[in-house]
Amino acid sequence: MSHRTSLSDPRVARSRERLRDAMLTLTLGRGWDGVSVQDVCARARVGRSTFYVHFADREDLLLASFRSDHIAPQRARRAEPLAFVQPLVEHVAQQRKLYEALAGTSCEPAVTRRFTNVLAETIERDLAQHRPTSMPRTAAVRSLTGAYRETLTYWISGRSGASAAELVNLLKQLSRPAYESHSLVASAARSD
Image (cartoon, rainbow, N blue to C red; front, side, top):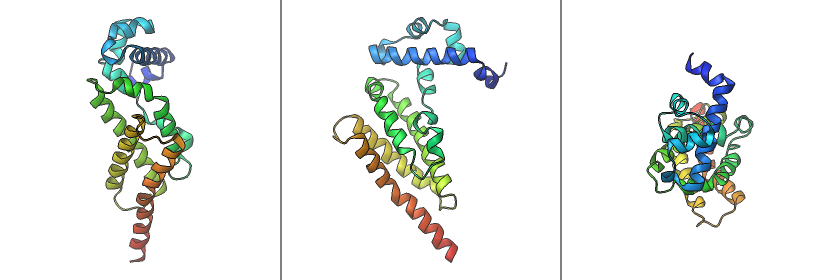
């Protein structure tokens, strides 16, 4: 059975979902270092062999749950520029306790890298859709990704005092120059 076929099998999807839910619940309750693969399997009512068919280890399971469709639903991908920002902030707000539980643990660097990659993919897709003829997007994507990640991290810490709505507006304001400069540069290039 191919990997693609196995993922489309409803039983496989249910097992993966149960494992994911068990990992998240246990991590929130015990902290990352207090959870073992055996604990996750027991909570999910899945055998260890089934776990290892799908995931290499706990970190692999955790990282598999960071997907761009969680932070930028399909409806946000086809809307106006920066429509993904609201769902992104909502996602981060919903996952705040998980982020706090992972802070300072051995998996934090991997989680940060995965979240950064998902965020970069989301921003790249949005820029490509709304500014397809723009100058090189790589610098804009990297800049916005770093700004978003650091701003969201600061917001999660609770030190900013900003509401979710204020954060959405701030992130959009930070983004506009990149979106506008791309359109201005593309317009200037066409008129030369």
